Amino acid sequence: MTNSALGWVSFGSAEAEAVNALMGALTDSEARDELGIGAIRDGFSDLLFPGTSTVQTRLRYFLMIPQIFHDIDLRARDRQAALRDAEAGLIARILALPEGADRDQLIGVDAGAKLKRMPSAIYWGGIGAWGIRLDDRARIRDVLERMAEGERCWAEMPSIPKDDTRGFNLTKDEADWIVDRCASLRDGQTLLGNLMSRARNISQINDLNKVAQLDLPLNLQLQLNHALAFANTLFGASLLYNLLLAERFAPDTVEQWQQQLGEWQKSEIAPAKDAHTLIAPLLEASAEIAFRPNDCTMRFLNAWLGVMHAPTSNDARDIIIARERQAKPGRARLQLNGDYNWSGSSGAGRLTFRWGRVHRYLQDISEAKKA
Image 1 (cartoon, rainbow, N blue to C red):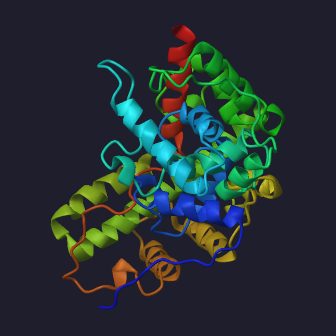
Image 2: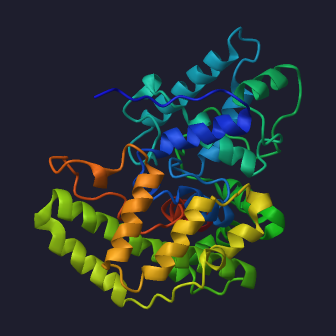
């Protein structure tokens, strides 16, 4: 068996950030894309919650990282090395905070200075999307060079003192600044901004379906409703995919997957007329969020919409088998021999569009507001 490797050609900042996001997300359960619908999943995520990522952890990093850029010695011969040293220092300082300080979800808690992907790389795209970095397409090295030349590269923001001991606990001023920043995204027309503005009252909501029951502006309600409809529709396809894997590689779990698929079939899911109707808000915002539908994916969605009322039929099975082969040429599990060691679940979770990360951010804001 030949070894495979992931590589890329360096083009520009946008492409580099996309690769960084991909590399970080490969280990995230929601990022598993067995049926090739990741572009639509990410499109809805960017539409609802711009600037977020599944590999982000805590909200205060949006302030900590720019602060590090301001604090490093820009006269250093190797500015990127100086930045890395400063980020390693941040990890060490947070680890050294007294008992009771908020260190939860510290990036690099185990690796420390040996961490391969520093927080600046993880949050770089989000910092640009939120307008915290004035040039949202500039790379890290570009910003370091421009700062050394005296150029203003960052929005005005609350500063964090060098002797700060709060860990990831935001101050009220910091929370207010972030809320105002998010509320202004896309002229105030994002679900992220809306929820951030009311975080104190809704941070206890942990289910995205319950968010849809809030009193939301009509356009945001429509976006969320379509995203949830897409998630519900594709959940059935994911369950059938896992049932097919179980039949092939883990017969003792077949009944479990049959039961889950049966429960999904009984739920009240009204199929969309077609794929374009299902993802209509994405198509309307395609230029704004850089979304472009893939013809093969749209054909798969249309095919699945046509058979989802009978998810265990031969037609439904054939569609899933063909789609996996198309999405993962040469790597389709359903084409492997029966001795393949399957983990028991492959991308079977319902899509949540980074809601878990956003929910953590709402909690960070709420805790600061109540302090």
